[in-house]
Amino acid sequence: KYKEEFYKEYNFFLKEGVCQDHESQEPLSKLLYFETSKGMSGELTSLNEYISRCPPEQKDIYYLFAPSRELALQSPYMEGFSDSSREVIFLYTAIDDFVMANLKKFEGRNLISADKSEADFSKSDDDKDGKDEDKDADSSSTGNKLTSAEAKEFCTWFSNSLESKVSTCKTTNRLTSSPAVVTDSESGAMRRMMRIVETQDGGTGAMPLPKQTVEINPDHDIIVGIHRLKEADPVLAQVLAEQVMDNCLVAAGLLDDGRSMLPRLNDLMLCVVKSSVDKNEGTQVEEEKSAEEPKAELIMEDGVDTPEESKGYEGIQDAEVTKEDDVKDKK
Image 1 (cartoon, rainbow, N blue to C red):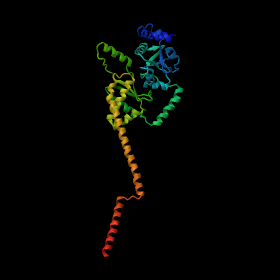
Image 2: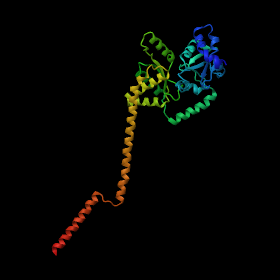
Image 3: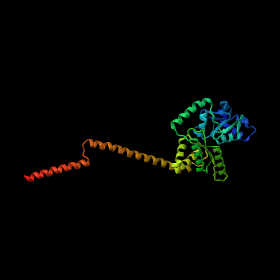
Image 4: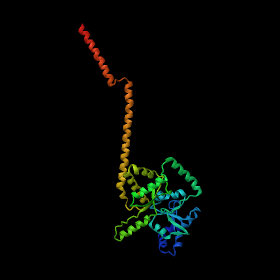
């Protein structure tokens, strides 16, 4: 009854108490419930229940802020946790994010956001056996990855190319299907809240975004492709790097206005369309040429005269006509 009735009605006041009443923070925090990555949609778990399910090697409590459960599960920040079987608490409102920022610890365990670089993704022995085999199979099937030297070179190029947005670029093993993420950034929920407050105070709400720490996946096809393009086509490589950076900001909830990406996205789509059209046209021309060659051979086999043969036949016919005229004259 507590979770279904009381907590549903009064959870906001409990969270407000955690943020404002520091003396009662610990007992109040035990009354909080959240969804987690291992539970079902709508299934709530307390922090004590979360700790009871932690593997022995896990020392911290992890949480992730997202607009919905679906987006939380699809977040690139969940990739490392899914790979290591770590459970993550899902937060859907700004007050939840504010609670975690104020609580900081629970039962001696640090509360750490999933987008922090300090998150521990070490696997248990059971996880290592299965996951490592899958990763080796994926790497061997694609055959695309940057060496340590190439990855270091790419990080330097990426930082220099986006100097106004990137403070540090480094490789990471936390990603599997995403090319890059930003870590150690400010909370997206807190940033939006501050923008609202500034707008209400008469400001414009325009808050400059500090430079970000970017972590790249050196095994991802996009990163490998950009690394090759930066020499072959520097302009396209620059555009792609900017798009990767904006994608990272979107995933972190830090892009204030997504409309800024539209011109670049249109350019990229135009590039893809033109490349595809040119490729198809080239294929069609080759197919037409290939189709014409058998026709020419078939015509030769059917006995149709070639231009050279026609000229020869015409000469023979002219000679026969001349002979006939000579015979008539003699008569």
